[in-house]
Image (cartoon, rainbow, N blue to C red):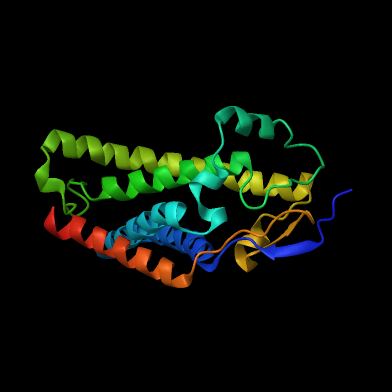
Length: 220
């Protein structure tokens, strides 16, 4: 029997802040679109793009559990993990499990595509995107259609993510939500604690991400 009573800090503050900031930004983007507050919708889109840029950098230079190289596995391994989804046994992974790693990648790809496509939107309802003038009308219309397709795909992925969290809680008695709030996860006794990157590094990467988005919007 493995001892899962040992709790360690698995999710650093930057990763948790990114997670919950994205939740708020996506909800805010939807509400501002429904209320036709397009100026705020655009601002939230810029903030979302900044957050995604940061998470991509954090996935390379951040803490162990945030790094793509540490949790990305082959699709075969992820599918094999899913075959054990309905078993009671608790996962032994510290951080993302094999299937969860692919879900992270999918969500980031959809968020990135949604935010970038918003820069090009050009139609009779919403304001023109800051980059809509650098492409032809046909291309801008195609990207606008893609913006809506990606939104629907994002909602489907979020729904799947929530279902997985619920299944893990009910079937495996493995709470995936609380560790993303507190940062602490119960792990096997022999599991090593992950190395955590410094907040200063996170601040530098976030600042660089914000500058990149500002340059993308203003100068391209």
